[in-house]
Image (cartoon, rainbow, N blue to C red; front, side):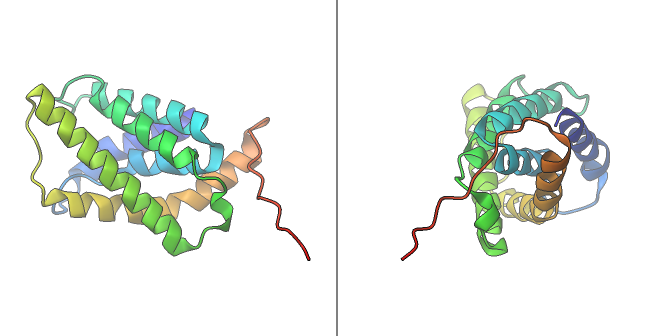
Length: 166
């Protein structure tokens, strides 16, 4: 999971931040944290979120207060990990989950920036950020789930609830 987090942070800071897209850079690290939370549970999501956020806070392009991204991504990973069984969700439900967590994370970060006196991004960027995280997350979630099932021994099993018969 650590390699996935580091790769996502590097992709976000080195590649996505340089793309000439309208709005903020695509939240590749947030999409990875949500995917890890969905596949591994709330503890894995929280650890991945805190780690990714801390890396984003200290990586050179960052010019904000240390810990804001770490707190926001910790909350996002924990929320994603609280989904009881993401394997039975339709793609539209996963997209809604990604969009909701992305919007909540954006609003939490902007609220913390405002409270700390840091510059706040324009409200119009919220839509671009949510769309970017949702598109990237829909591509990452199945791959991350497969990788964690395949390569992480002892990962907590996420069982489907028993369906009553008869």
